[in-house]
Image 1 (cartoon, rainbow, N blue to C red):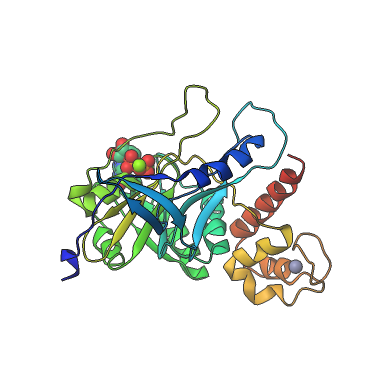
Image 2 (image 1 turned 90 degrees about the vertical axis):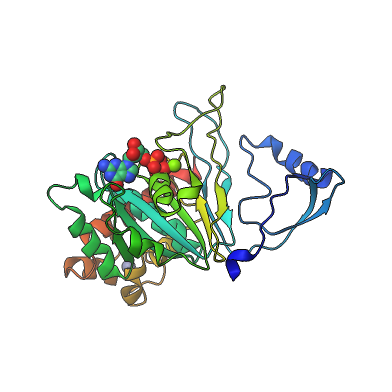
Length: 304
Ligand SMILES: Nc1nc2c(ncn2[C@@H]2O[C@H](COP(=O)(O)OP(=O)(O)O)[C@@H](O)[C@H]2O)c(=O)[nH]1
Ligand SMILES: [Mg+2]
Ligand SMILES: [Zn+2]
């Protein structure tokens, strides 16, 4: 049985040469991680059972965002890429209907980040026990129609949890979403042994200059891994050009090639097939609105 494969934890530090690479980046305000959750590495084993990482193997894929903006801080320069995790099989974007309220604009930002990394995504709408008016149904329908798998869940009543658990075996599964939506709660319900802390909000170092974001990967048997990601308030997808953004709204694909100009950014350009599709209700207003908003932030970042 795969469950019997032994998984051993070895505490490692990075070899000096990585540290030098690290130092070179110090002229920038933010530093990005060198080794991230999910990386495959080569290391030397010390006598005391600890290890020295001397090589990080090429990543099959990785999920990232821009290093978060710090409120009230003013600085110049680019915002670096922060890698959340590497070598992932699928991502679950976790949302909730209430506490915090469902925010489709935020969901779309997460989706863009996943799509630009070529990762398979499922959307979880949690806390439906709080949803007296069943507003989740509208969003479930909207995202299902586009082609995403959507699972409505409640940690309280247990609805949807079996459906979710059936999707996880044999994969490296990353759970991503805003703070407080119930990521850790759901994972605790699925795997009692995890015993993750619940109810955390994003934390800052004492200086308040760097948001602490660390992900943790857990082996839960059956060749299955779970990555829990704490402390996300909002994300800005990294490294996306204006002219490429439309490709990460997957339902635009049917129309993009029919635009009059191949440099079309689907705003006010004449002969835009995406705008026409919005006018004909073939693309939802909500999604198109998200698209325009993200497009705006991409422009701002150039002169950040
Ligand atoms: N009513 C309700 N509350 C939930 C549900 N899932 C989680 N919560 C609560 O939401 C809060 C945040 O949960 P947590 O798992 O820490 O969220 P995370 O930041 O996404 O990991 C906690 O107080 C949980 O008890 C749910 O399905 N229904
Ligand atoms: Mg959590
Ligand atoms: Zn267009």
